Image (cartoon, rainbow, N blue to C red; front, top):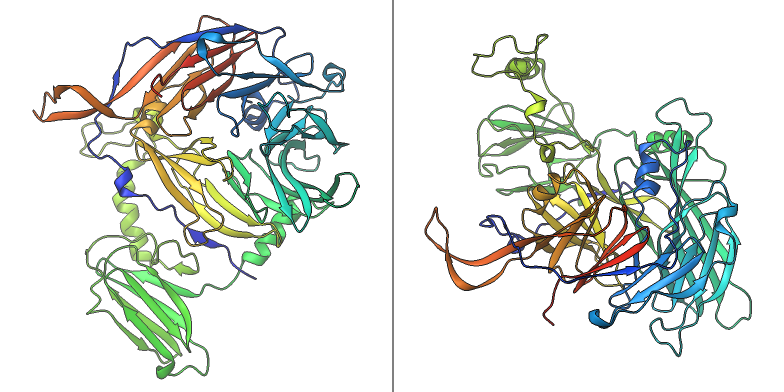
Length: 583
């Protein structure tokens, strides 16, 4: 069985600004415009049986405003009359009313257990649509934005089961066959489960195809289901349709038809339980790695190369272990020897004495760390001051007990098992895993509609934007932009609801549940001379923060950012905020 590769995200240091100070509040007014809607947005509130945190994440925080990434400054929403309404902005001072481009053929209010209707812009001429009742529509639109060629027509319309929302979709043309692959999200009751909330999250990967030369209709060609226990923060199909990437708190696994989530977990666990490739121990001065050799392995079959920051081990012409070490070693003093029990013992001398290594080779999970009883006792002794049966038994002591109430919200991360996984579309197995640890997920944005959506993660205090490249196996995720200190700043916004950024990275923005919108601009050169008061040095660039307050008391239901504008949707109004006035 192939083991998933443990990967890491490579930060581009030139994109970080260690000298960034803070955002400066700007009182410059932001031009804003308000459009009253003919009919209210088709908001679907959570029912009494949708009480879990996962229901809130998936449906309660749903973004009802959709931006067409193929056409600049074009947004869509669905109203309670079942109409898909579009607003395309060419000139801010000559805004027209949102226009109807399509009307759902079914009455949305007739279904009691429906979800919110969802839409995804698959390509420049295709759209996938769900009415929230479990029915999927595939719509050919022609060239949207072109009044001559734009015409929304249903080419596929089928009931797929329980209600779902659309997460992502792509259009594929291979060997004279056109396919639409889409990801559908459901939260279903797990009747036999006695653990947790009693619900599981289902991601269904549905492919709809038609031969180009045939006159046949589009039909469902393939359906695969992944299940997990948490709503994914990010899920997207690769542009070539060969894989799928998911960012989630709890892992997802593909399940066979009729197979339960617990059964698939048991299968995966039995596959994953295997003997470690090596064992390693450490002291304050060195590390010892033990490898059991094959029976017919001789000294001539062993090649060990020590480098200051890495190690390479070759057994009988095959690479056994290679990679970067957690920290530097004295490679000239490191040695290896064959023991009497036919094992290879490698001694690595630490460059920095006293440092405890959490892992031997960065990202490698094939070894097992063995800690002796003396080390455990020493660690327990050092950590004793952090625990006590009393709240604060000795407040005058040098090392008082840790008080979690003193931590700021931005220092607390609940999702310790936060991970990014890549699944192969053919084998349905995990091929790449990135342990994101405390790199909190913030939002996703489409920079290039022909590529996968980018995702933004917190890195220390900054917010880093990553572009997935499925074609680059060695460097699958590229760091493309940084929003300085935004990871820290956003943590103080307790009422934040939606987060977004401009596709050209010129600004990031977030909105609260009611009224307020915060805009954080990238640093720009100063037109006047400005000096830092503390250091006396001249400041060449300043990053501005701006705040806009909407004239409404209705809750914000949708939020989208383009290079020039912010669109904010409430129950009865659509607001437009002009962010960038320069062309």
